[in-house]
Length: 370
Image (cartoon, rainbow, N blue to C red; front, side, top):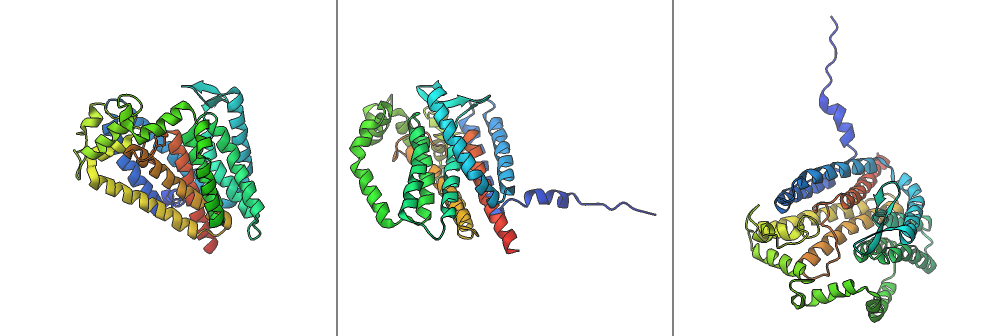
């Protein structure tokens, strides 16, 4: 008598998850879980916020999975078209963009999109491709041209105005240029030139941007206005103490003193409820995330992959550093979410794409070795 062979369920599912890098996926999963727990408390007055974030996580998961399947060689082919389309959309935004709250950052192409988010990935991808084509024969002119490729989208984004995103794109591109071998002497010269140009830069800032800097220096000058965000977030962080007030028991949070508590200032909610111990745990998770990314970058098989992986990893670092810095009152408020933690769809999708690229680089390194 013939018996049908029983096939276990796990082998049929396992190949779909084998594209993920185990350590990286686990770290991101843990950060997402802590973020959802905190979001439940922060968004208790916003029904459906946790469910929406779970949907955002699912979308980011799919984007991560698809990106992990794409070989680095294919990513190189997308570099120039993606950068060109991104810059073209930024120009279109400057000409025909939608104005919201005094900023022209969006454009309707059937759906309303914010093209500057695309450049967070397109710029490092383009610059990594650019330096890959010149590997072994880099000249100072190449770094100059790379700087021009970086300044174009940064200038267009800053003009919208969107200083926070412009700084993130600038940082993403700078990391690639630095990792490509930018001389420390040039780096020092750029730093001195930047310091000398601060008066000119200050004169070019919008009034609200100057107000953010002045508020950072002394938020008590306008405690109920522009300084309110920083004052209340630092009170929440300090009141958490060592062990925190406990989940769902944050007074600053539930008395609605913390602004934007589900997005940019969710770290203040977390600090108040979980205290110093919780902060140390979260910092360890981000340290592990960055360390894993740098390991993937160091072991990447090609110059392009090393530059791209290093830049993406440092983007994660920049997101976390800037967000925690502005919530703690040591950096100006620029509207940067905490990676894989804050509520939001667009930023989470961008971060998921970056994580998927890291996994792609690691996966195809193993395939090359085998």
